[in-house]
Image (cartoon, rainbow, N blue to C red; front, side, top):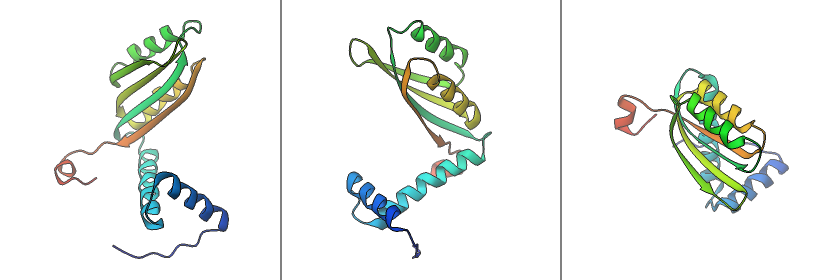
Length: 143
């Protein structure tokens, strides 16, 4: 491991300390390592739109809203090559939660996720894109 000195302004340090407390980090080094890993993973996916990835798309919607269920189902069918699996949960009388596991190229997955989340009456949508690891890196546990 290498030691690095970083200067952070007071507001950023306070925010880091808040995140540490919320997530239960034992020290700032652990928190900064995890946040750095997350930022680097995001930078890799942003820089390589043609790279393979896997993703989890999570969103809620009002299933009583006019044709929203039909539009969402049609979108999944239209992009059946990206959708590996979906989970549908009835949260209450009106709200549904869907979790879709996607696999494909970063740009295609992000475009599809953005399209679904932008549908009228879809709320709280978010996608987590993870760069796919292939070949020897899989066997070594690296990336």
